Length: 359
Image (cartoon, rainbow, N blue to C red; front, side, top):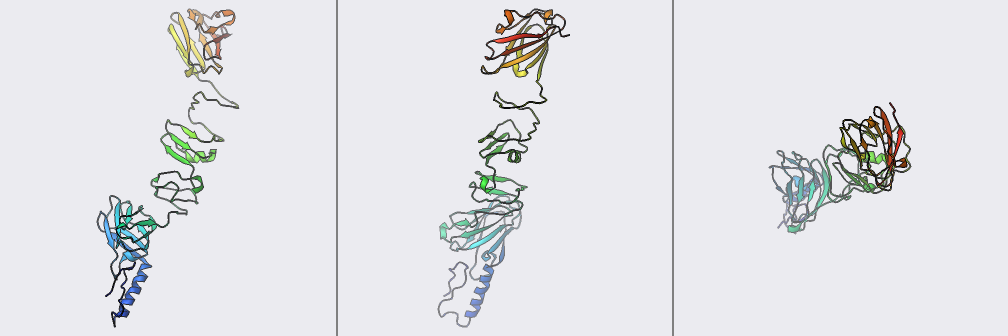
């Protein structure tokens, strides 16, 4: 009695059996072995999960070493394709040539499965362990060059080594983990809307590559201070009261807080709005207040260009310390230049009349 328990489902002729036809059965087996070393195709007939069974002693695409899966129509979701019998231990190069841009899952039993994205090829092997049979990716590390349309890496650096030029993608690269610098990565763990975190040692060159077109209101955080060369700012930079050391300034300006007519009453000079201030006294008595100087360990000052200061009564903050404890006489119709600075966060402001009746 013939059996078919081997990994290619070839006919195993019992001793003394098939007298006169043994040659025919043997030739069929040889043809099937040749098929197992060749190319085959199978079609997913419906937009659903399907099972493909290698038949006993019969030519069929599932036996081929290179197995290309196509589909009768477009798949609308990831489909699971089961290779049976679950006792077959074999190696396949499987190509996902189905329509619809969907992944396919290759399984054999209740064990591990392998997902192959649309248009991709993968070496897999089955262990033939029966009900718990597993499918395993035989090439977890891919090295090469070219164009990548979709990359899914589920385990950080495992599964992707790239040593060629830049990766060009027309799809989405999804990575649950960090692609290490040694494997072609940049060390970036996230690059979302306005937020990029860098754990490597950046330079101006790879910074430009890593965060081109980065937009948003978040923070760019470095694990190691970068060296930036030839940086051109296209917008405002907020320093958040941090220290900048050893800087040479050239062709710089200070933003003027142009208050205009004070209208009498209380007029605040907010240093967050600029350290150059201009104002015109009119209407009635005017009381100035100063707000938001820098911290007490820093010198903070501003210049006030005041028009018609002497036309009305002007009251200064009690914290202003004038020479001889006397506020200056201001010009009734003209411009006075006054300078104020503090070194203790505004507890004491030192005031000076720098120029009187300038116009």
